[in-house]
Image 1 (tube, helix red, strand yellow):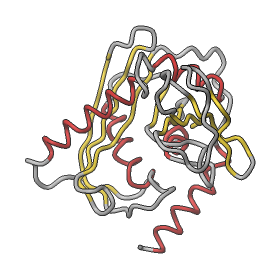
Image 2: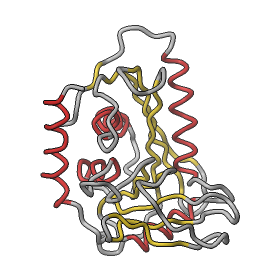
Image 3: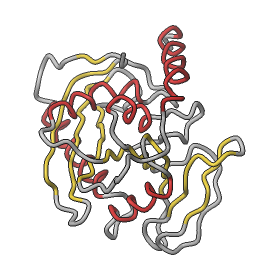
Image 4: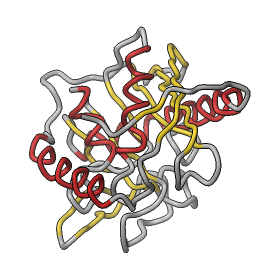
Length: 233
């Protein structure tokens, strides 16, 4: 389980969590939102070949305007609550290859809805300095389901405190779990997630990045000598 690496990762989260800001920049009106996702070879729990994709979507029209990808390997162990240490390094590489600077990042994971209030979305936001939202498909714990109508929401609680929203993005379909990543408030984050869900459960940013990284991972299967990624510094 590599206890030294695990302990160091937990300590980093605890050290960086106070840097998260729950207020957007002045005049924040995002035009370009970038979905960020990573695909793994195998079952995704051990050392794996990985592909990351960042896909920029026009918030108003839903059109794709830019994208970038990166491939490599990761050997950081699969540990709940420490997904950033498997995914962040290669996501940052993909972001570094992106020629467009997005106004907003949408991560496929939690932000402050995390035991140490510093999930993947928060780590990504603090590392890049960009407003970031966490949109996860699974809850970090028990929750009260919202009414079945699109736009309905209930508080997502951890240890008695609200850390996010259980948001119904499509009538009669399972909700998603929205939380602040960095430089955004929960109301604005939820509103933007609804704008990015055009008749679908997941935001188009997430859907586009998921498709792209899976395609790249299929192509990666024919390559050799991928770059190796360790935990972020």
